[in-house]
Length: 223
Image (cartoon, rainbow, N blue to C red; front, side):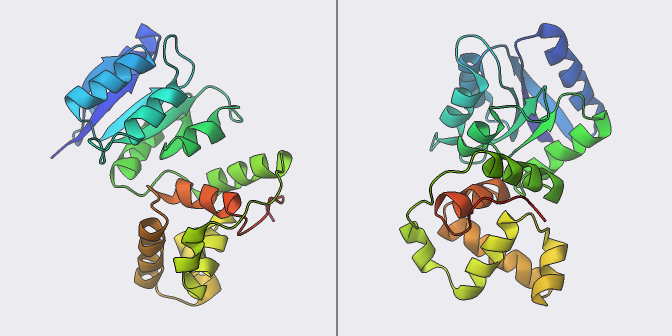
């Protein structure tokens, strides 16, 4: 069964290009297009795509608000949003992730990488590779905020889960976690799964944000 993709961008040429690219993959299919955030929300509710390729800057409702509405809709629990940005340090990236986006890519990402990203997001893994996680950490470090009051949800985590969460927020991949903690890959994945469930997080991106906003770790430049 193919991954259903909704393409959202206010430029018709860009939308058409992404749609054609998606349809070149045998395991992916474009199920619709939208030119504004409002249209994106309506299309998501109508088509129930697996992944929404979401532009940020659009008229009417922007991509951030559209992402918030889609990810916050209880009738669209399986819909994932992949943000496409023009600049590497787009000022809206953090806001998009907080709104529920599963990750972000640059619009000039090589076609093969974009298709691979759609598959990753559709699988529910969240597109925050270590390099992307570290970029997000740099954003926290650049604009440090006062430590947050620890969230009550953290009290439900075991010591090992807190350790895993802190390392995920520092940008470690699952493979790096296995080496650092001397655990098997299945065990690491089990810990990640439990963290997602206990913190009501959609994916890895949300875990990184939760770790910082609850004060589990404080912003600092990545090592």
